[in-house]
Image 1 (cartoon, rainbow, N blue to C red):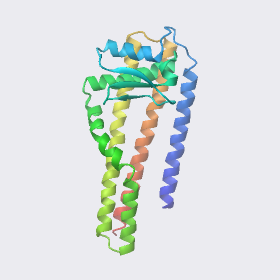
Image 2 (spheres, one colour):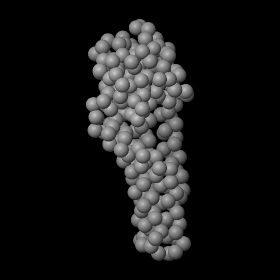
Image 3 (cartoon, one colour):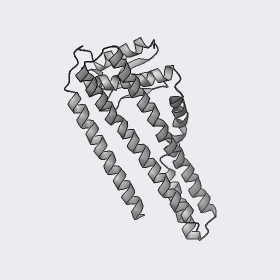
Image 4 (cartoon, one colour):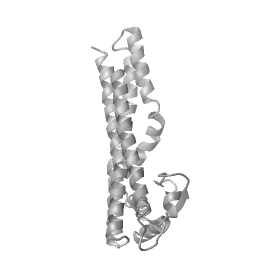
Length: 233
């Protein structure tokens, strides 16, 4: 178990460092005011309009960095620090979330795959580690390598595997949304060169949070797989 705690601790540290850097970048680029004077909400609405998307609403949501696109009710949810602000960070986030709306409208395959996994992962991800651990404990208690404990642990690994797949499917979804956002910002001359650089840097660090999460999920899956299958030897 010590190896697991070290692994999880290392991942948590890297995640914290990336998250802290992301917050620092957004704070920095929140001071780069847009020359066009548009708010995050206005930028989001214009990007939707430019892509011919008329059935998606732009709304404000409480919190910091709580921005997201909801494909169920077709809403672009912008945090309070993005919805009304007029800076490079707000422009980047607003355009990024609209990038997801564009993906949805164009049936982007990775987003479709991700959406199909959401109901399953939302139920199984929180319990998978406990199921694997419980199966291993049962294997140890009964001394039977291929008994019911083993199959319980494997079931937990499958659940954990689905969450890991979900994390990696999220990567192309997020990177593509950022790409769409930056292309639109540049092609429509929505930002100056300095503002564009800030938007690009902010989105780059936002994407890294998803990368760290995916690698963490994979590392955890591999560790527990070794514990389960190694326990049969």
